Length: 157
Image 1 (cartoon, rainbow, N blue to C red):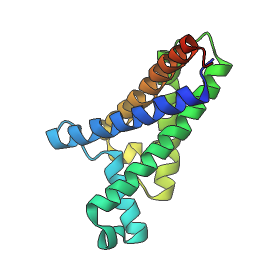
Image 2: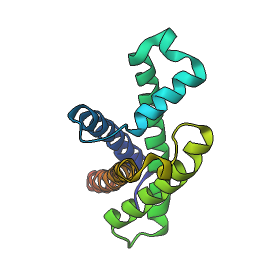
Image 3: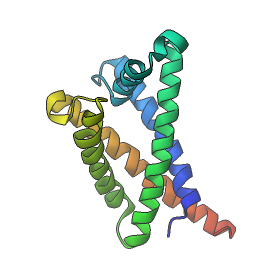
Image 4: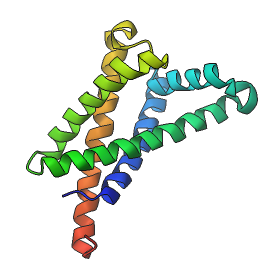
């Protein structure tokens, strides 16, 4: 069983890694407009943040939001892992990530006006975003498992 603490730590690290991949992907030209940029634009449209705290400040607000979501989704993974303890963490993480993508990018985010939706974004952008969700959740799963094993070896649970 994966502890909440192990899952949270794994989710936070995966959130940082995913953000790094999005930044590197955009700067290298390998990725199109990533979800974090849509979120920064939405924050600014909603609050006028760029005029007050600038691009960097608005990006930091979005990064905090991303880490919060990463932590919350990691707790969801921990619950799912408890329900399906014999399932491969890679498979479980991937299925969870695909589900989060479907709910978030194909459902909630377009309704809130954060993104245009998977279909409207086009196949390339939608595939990139699905891939980033899979990276996030599979990495969360693997890190949570690793941290949990280390905690058990130390006798911490």
